Image (cartoon, rainbow, N blue to C red):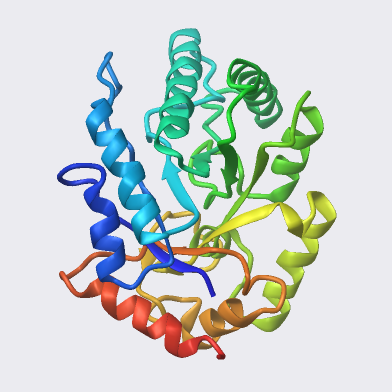
Length: 282
């Protein structure tokens, strides 16, 4: 299996490889900048980018995923936020390209007080512009499913179906499947039937081959509660048996898996990784 964690962005960006390597990760996910603030003209130092690429080559940690800023909303009805989000996304892809990252992971945005269809239309328009402006890039875009809180898109896979169907160019667009989000949105991944049903739906809507990343998280909330809270592997409502079934599912086991489980203690990542490896059939 290809297993890793979301690595803290504290310190220099290239130090993420040291952390990931110490944990025995095969892959990793990072924020390339603060997820809670706009770039405001600040870009990575060229020396830091060079060192990031050097450590990437040395550690052989692949693929490398970058999670987009939480402030970006490509489905927003507010023109200022919408256009600012598009520009920020373009800059983030350009920087991801410089770093040699493989994918950017993004939530699909909130339609706010408008309709889901209107939000999806805006998102398609935003992605069309982003893909056109970065058409020379090798960085893929992964649409992450959500728990369905508030007016967030992506809690049902027909949203991803509509988006992919609407895009002018879709070769660089895939999916990130978050297990906690799926459960919290109402897919009962604690059961064999629930997992099979979700995979059948994804296959019908967009095709399982488009899943390029799994965020492997247990769910702290009840089934279908739409409240986005992750839990440690086996400690949430998906449970140990449910997580083991996901980890070893023949249609999923070769897809990179990133843990976004709580960092309750300094050993949390190490403990969750060890448990996943134990649950994985050799």
